[in-house]
Length: 398
Image 1: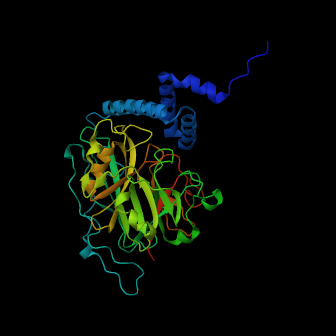
Image 2: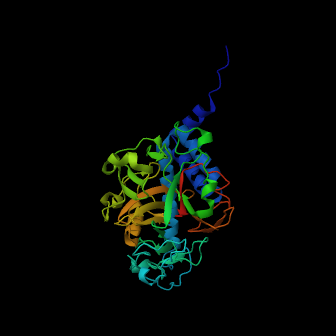
Image 3: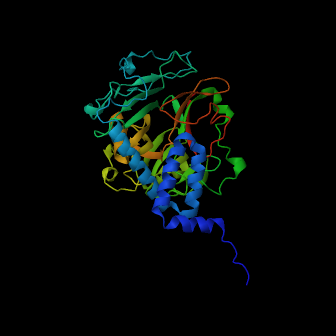
């Protein structure tokens, strides 16, 4: 009698994991530890496991691991002072736009948008707020250090139950800064561009004006949210997708796709996310609903995780990027709204993916500062070290 042929590894692993919640939980806890120590390796392992067992078991396992982390943090930080990303000493108030020096005819620096920086605001939950909450701090343009700052940052603690939950928000003056979008060399997965046409790097021509870079949206497997850059559609837009778009005339919009689909031919790029967190200045009620899965194809909507978002003010003149830790979709939305964003799209989530880096202004740019703690990054990321996932970057307008 002939010996039975051995089953392929994938089939054996699937059988071992499919009916074993305990095994999945162990994988999730190990993955949670690894992603905080070795984010790139952990991402590959999680994606590999997801390819074997499917997204739902991995989502369940991630939820359990993050739930354990949240319980530990709530015990650990009970009664503790609010967590911060930078000095808790309140900075001097940002000068109003009318008090800033106007650009002269011979100057290459444009005058700030009226109303920039945004006005300081009261902390939404004073009981968990740090002294810096709502106070805007200038981020100097390294190319023009004596000119009015084109970026400002602030902190928001949006969760009254968690003093360790916080969001760092960057305000971006769109009259002096241009937002650009770049696909990674692997994500979003698409046959529309070959590997040689998606290097995952900022073009060298943008180095002399490069200010910052930050993360894009979900992987294609998590919702197939659309993306188009320079006339090439990597993923088709979904009607319900909250869409970050820059038009060829330089203006930007954040809105559900069906509200801007007629203007697709006028767009320089668009990147989609799950349904908008904030629309018309109103936080989406579903963002606060328990067990809502609308803002994470791999995690439950109530999972307390690192999240990121992009938004615009009412006039579309000031953009806001936000990222933070121990957040639900609802608390992230509340923080962005408090800072002044009236239209908000959630971007990527989980520990390794939300990231905002500032560059040093050198001819060969290097990362010089982080918005919030991020692990395992290299100084030449985005400029010499290719990115697997899509991202946005900021350049000063000429």
